[in-house]
Image 1 (cartoon, helix red, strand yellow):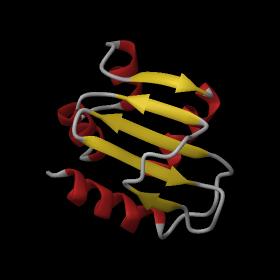
Image 2 (cartoon, one colour):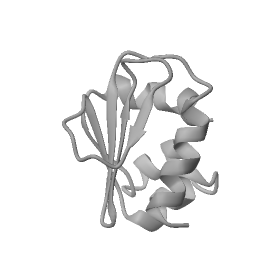
Image 3 (tube, one colour):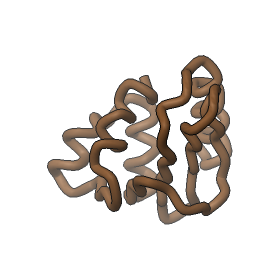
Image 4 (cartoon, helix red, strand yellow):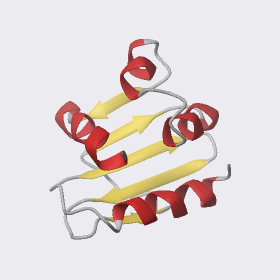
Length: 98
C-alpha cells in the first residue's frame, strides 16, 4: 500500500467521523499524513503541518497499523511507534481509525 492509498483510505474513514478537537500527524520515512480534527469531518492531507500530537513510525509499520495487522498499543510498547506531544490525543486515535 502506498502513502497515497493509505491517505485515501483514511480520508474515506474520516468522512464518517465528527471533529475530535485536535490535530495529529503520522510521520514516516515515506512522508506524512496530517489529520485536522478541529472540523467535521476531519481533514486528512499529506501536508507536513504542525500538530498537537506527532506519531513517528516506519512506513511498513504504519501500513500494518492502518491495515489492521498491527495494534497501536503493541506498536507503542515494542518501540515501533513513538509519540511526541499530547499523549491524550494519541489515545483518541483508536476510535477515529476504526
